[in-house]
Length: 141
Image (cartoon, rainbow, N blue to C red):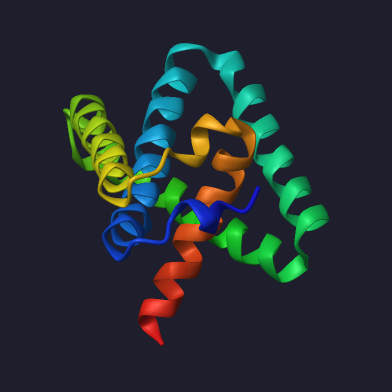
């Protein structure tokens, strides 16, 4: 499955490029909240990060692994800042998380195809951040 094949319409591409980092950031906020409530939750977070690192190294290359590591570390830093400064970060995260998902489904409605998520949830969650980061760098060219 090629994640890009599901995202050809310019509106859908645009929505995914910006909604995916929002979903990653808000998910990290949720994970950080769980980590505060359940101290053993660190194991789950580290397992996810190790899985993603192995995936990016095996299926792509060291440069992609490095780029995605910087992306995820940046998301964790942003999460820490958000949590530190915003008392209602959990509610804000929930609202943004929901809104970002709705916008992505709207993008697929506009494009007229189903989300990649319906074909492979694992591939979607590993390739979506890479897709978004790739598109952001293309915008900066």
